[in-house]
Length: 217
Image (cartoon, rainbow, N blue to C red; front, side):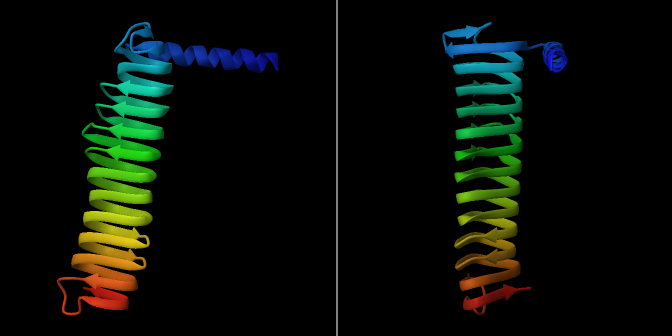
C-alpha cells in the first residue's frame, strides 16, 4: 500500500513537472480576483484550484466556483461557471458554461451551455446553444444551433440549417436534409429527407401538412 502511494505521488510530480515545461504554472490557487497564487492572469500548466480566479492559457485540470480563462483552454474545467475567451479543447462541466473562441472541440455540459462559434463534439444541458456550426451531438431540454451537421436530441430542437437528425417532441428547421422524428416536425424547405410524427410540415411542398409521415426526395 505504501509503495502504491509513493508511485502515485511520483506520477503526480512527474505530471506537474511535464506541465511546467510547457511554460505555465504547475499549480494555481485562488480565492478571488485579487488573491491568486502565483499571480493573476498567469498561464496554467497543471492543477488549478480556486473560488474565483482568472488565467490566460489553461492547460490541465481546473476545479473552482467561477473560472475565467482569457486565452485557450486545453484539458478539463469543472466549476459552477466557466468562461473561456479563446478556443477550447477538452471538457467543460458545471452549471453555466460560456465558450467564446472560434472553435470548441470536446464536451460541454451544464444547465446552460453556450458556444459562441463552432462546436465539434458533444453539447448538453437544460439549454444548449451553439451560435455557429455544430458538428456532433446536441441534447438537453432545449437545443438550438445555427447550423447542425449531426444530431439534435431534446424536447425541442431549433436550427436554421440541418444536415442529419432531429429527435424531439418539437423539431424546427428552416432547411432540412435528413430525418425529423417527433410529435410536431416543421421545416420550410426539405432538400431531401423524411418526417415522422403526429404533425409533419414541409412548407415549400405540394403537400405541406401530413399526419404520420411526410417526405421529399
